[in-house]
Image (cartoon, rainbow, N blue to C red; front, side, top):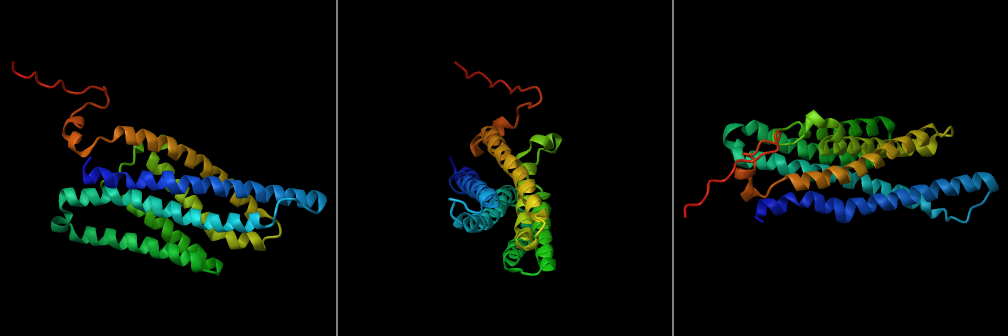
Length: 238
């Protein structure tokens, strides 16, 4: 494996050893929090400690940052590879500057979203963070598998990240809403996000199998992916 191949493994490696375990912990605390709430409503007390709700919120905030960060890492590799291969700094310097500014603005918007207190500013920074991910995802070099969007690692990932951003933005409203409408919205959206994360595990594994090593690319990309056939190598002279 060459350096480019190792760099391509950063995104899945972070997902495996950090993000997916974090998802498991968040789901566990979410279930415990709900069970405690139901038991308290039913009998007035629960054996589940109150700290589960605090931990659920704390780890949930971590998860949003981890998912958005992971998406940015996943986008930076193909975008950066495309810039280097085509030497865009000599041809489209404004595009390169724009991409760098978009990465910076997206990260800054996420940081400000964590700090925002008023609903209007949470909405603004959540929108800017989501827009940054979408715009970066539209850049050249990103493999989107648009013809199979319903089974695309890219679309699953962007959708999950957008749901996490929205969930982070509405957290303060959950605690203020006596009618529990925001809590229900939060539960539904994060249940959908959980299904997307499961899909991410499957589509990510599939894509790793399909991506050739850098030294294999010249031969692999001569294959006909529709007919699932590759050119027969010329026989070596005896």
